Length: 163
Image 1: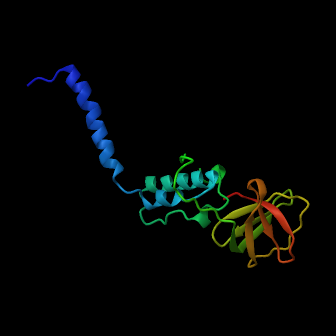
Image 2 (image 1 turned 60 degrees about the horizontal axis):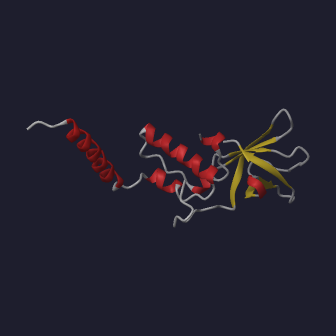
């Protein structure tokens, strides 16, 4: 039996559709599944980027990104759902951590490393905070995508996550 060119043109797309449908039934890897629950676009994108890195490296033992790990993340660090989607997105308002290291940059800005591995750089030149290694701090989401860290005296400054 000879196959005509028309038969080939019809058979190939059908075979491709069957392959796509069979792949759609596969569950998402845990690294990707976690990312879909994040509410903020920048954090979700950073999470997906991180998850893809984990999958490409073949590391199956590495933990999936968590909401706390992605808190404050953006494209610089990691590098569309339908609006009527039923997906519930998670958004953390704040995280807590202990300061493991602290240093000042040449311009006097504070760089704080937390026990969860996150690194935050001060953005306010005028704010003077009293923070030392070992101190517990809260990083709170503020207006317009900014974050604030408050010291033990109650003074706060804007910070940006750099890692």
